[in-house]
Image (cartoon, rainbow, N blue to C red; front, side, top):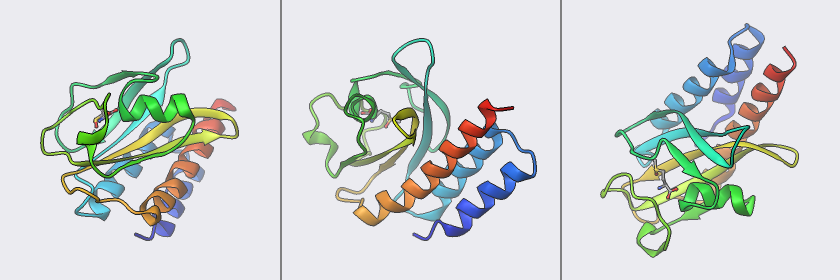
Length: 156
Ligand code: SME
C-alpha cells in the first residue's frame, strides 16, 4: 500500500484550514478503502484526564469498545508498552477484546509526537496473518501525519 498520496492529501487539508476532526475521518475512510484486508479501521485518541482510549471514528462494523483502558486488549497494550502491535491470530492473545467474531488479525499503530502518545490507528482483518511490516510502515506514515495535525491544532 502506498500512502504517499493520502499523506499529501491530509497535509493539504490541514493547510486549507480543516480541523483535525475532518482529517482523522478522511484518514480512516481512505485506509479502509485502500485494502480489502482492512475490514475495520478506526482511530482511538488517548484521553487527557484518565488512562483511557476513546474511539474517535471508524469504518466497518459497530463495536462495543468505544472506550478502552490503557493496558486492556491489543489497543490498550500498545499504549502501555509504547509500541505498535501486530497480532496475526487474535485467538492467541489472552486479554484480546473481541469486537466481532469474524476478526482474525489486528494491527495497532501508535499516533505519537516524540514521547507523547496521542492515540492510535487500529485495523482489524477477517484474515489470519493479514498484516506485514510493510503495512505497519505504511500506516505509520499516516499516523505520523495525524500526530502533526493534532499537535498543530494545540497551537491554534
Ligand atoms: N480488539 C481490540 C478492541 C478494539 S476493536 O478491535 C475495534 C483490542 O483487543 O484492543
